[in-house]
Length: 275
Image (tube, rainbow, N blue to C red; front, top):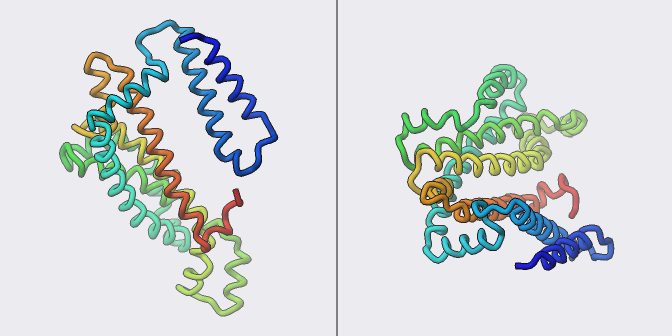
């Protein structure tokens, strides 16, 4: 493949990025596609300048992605990873949001539990892999436990901060209108904290997706992490390795878009900038 088409693609993508003539609706698609085109062109140029046959070019990586899709292994491993992430993440949200609300709302709970949360939070979820295997064995349960653990702390910390950062004037105004106790919490505190809670859920989902790949490289026999590790071991198929990485990124984008759908509800739309 000649070099000039790559340079032409890079130039066209850069011109699109810096152009101000695009209407607002078109920019939502043109700008990210232009960034992708720039990254692909730079990737191709880097492979050509390095002169290596080990690291795949974009064309080789996408060809490997198609190879995996034709053998159905890509879909099986993707479903396995999504199954583990869904269970662990949903359990973390079901437990973490109420815990964060209690810690954020109650001063005594904050003083009692926040030091424990802050002490456990910096421990890498990867460090829990040996303990997870010891407790649950090699299988889905250990992976779900790791996802729950890795998602729980970002959700708790984000929810706690969301409640404690509510302007005091909002609470005082509601109390002046006779709202107290659970009514105050349900009608003022929770709606005011929901936008930041959704942001915490997005962050936790990204962390969960990182951890599942790492855990599958160590103690699993399926999943995208296992696929990447297996491709590296079977003849150093780095094109399959990069193909697995691309699939992880694609699924990550889709999952983030699904969580962002929560921003469309009327109860939380006020807390986000209109895009």
